Length: 98
Image 1 (cartoon, helix red, strand yellow):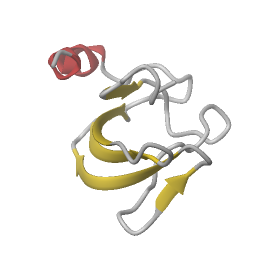
Image 2 (cartoon, rainbow, N blue to C red):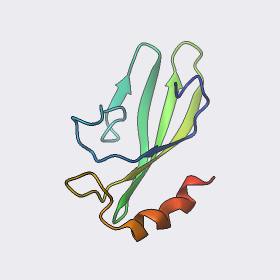
Image 3 (cartoon, one colour):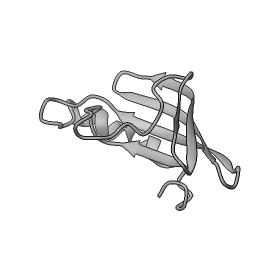
C-alpha cells in the first residue's frame, strides 16, 4: 500500500500499543524491518513532548527504488486512547501539510 500508492508521509494517530497496531518500522537505527517486497530503515528520530518525528528510508527490493518517508506519531494518549490535550493535538495539524 505505501509502496504502490507513492506515500511520503505517515501519520500514526494511535497509541504505541502492540495490541492495537503491529510494528511496521524499526525502533533503532541499527535494525531494519524487511518483507519479501521492501526494507525499511530508521534514518533519524526527533522526540518531542507529545510527538515523535521519524524519517524512514524505504527500499523496494525488486526495483531497487529508494525513498524517504516522514513518520509522525502522536504520543500523548490517555488510557481510553483519547488525546490528553486537544489543543496540543490540534496545534500539530501544520505538520500534516507538506
